[in-house]
Image (cartoon, rainbow, N blue to C red; front, side, top):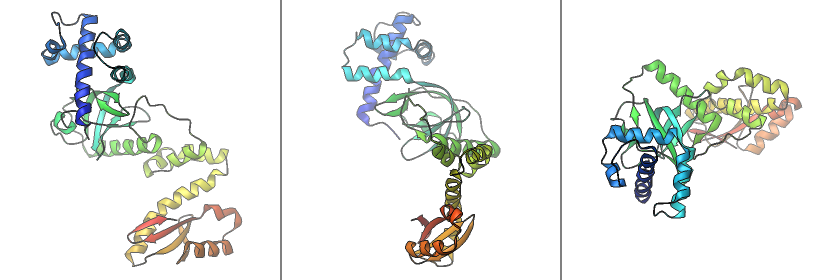
Length: 299
């Protein structure tokens, strides 16, 4: 969950220099003549300078344009990208193999995949049990997202109810937007099919957006097939486990409106059976899947 070592070194070459420049321009801490002297400041004073940077983000462009430090153009472009920072309060909700998940307070919520710097994020939050509520600033860095080295957790512990709600919020964020792994992030214009698929992607989103699902289908009846295909995936996971449990292997099945309506040894065989008795107006509603081993696989 960390940046490569050489990129960590690059970040700590660029970011303290930007903060030093911010202090020069805003005059927050007196008698600081070098980046090294800035780095020796007490944490509280460094935090004041950091807050000034995000209060006056135009300083980022000024830093790049003045180019008074010995940085390459590539390094300056990394700094310039930091004007797309995301500052706020987040729920550190889980640690995945590639990154930690920072869930924002938005409605709907968004989930960011964040890489660590020198110290593991878990270490920086005192090894607290997840979720952790904290203040952070997220920065783009070479196509990834990092924090800026300052994580400020709140001493709050969450009960089962809140943890359940946050898990639902994470599932919703992942379904609607995916995990955001680069900045700036802009929500792409979704087609009605994509929007319906995102609403249908989990039990949480199906319940929360049931009214929107109905409105989409009422507006365009062709989306009814998408609805049934997505529900077929849900039922296939349940039936796949049951069919595997009773010993069925390498078989194909078809689901219509939550019921298994056909089965066979090949997908082609199942398709032929379906063509023989499923009403034409419902043929596109049928979801065909394969049971192979312990999982259900779509054909």
